[in-house]
Figure 1 (spheres, rainbow, N blue to C red):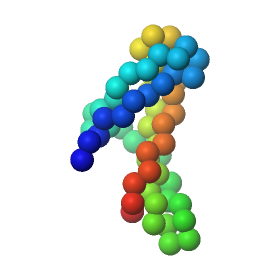
Figure 2: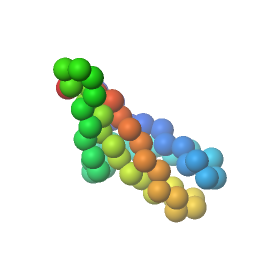
Figure 3: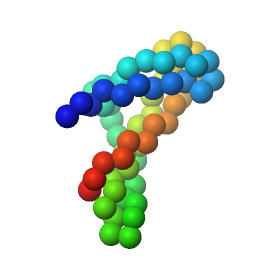
Length: 61
């Protein structure tokens, strides 16, 4: 399973790769009637301008 995602800063437009296996989950949300979808929320800092970027990653629960 590939744990690398592309993150784009909404302020400056800078894009970079982030390895989720090296990141810490900030929040977990379960969606759906049977809570079949697990949404992990990560917060990264743009290396160019310091903006905090929240990213949601959906996985089957």
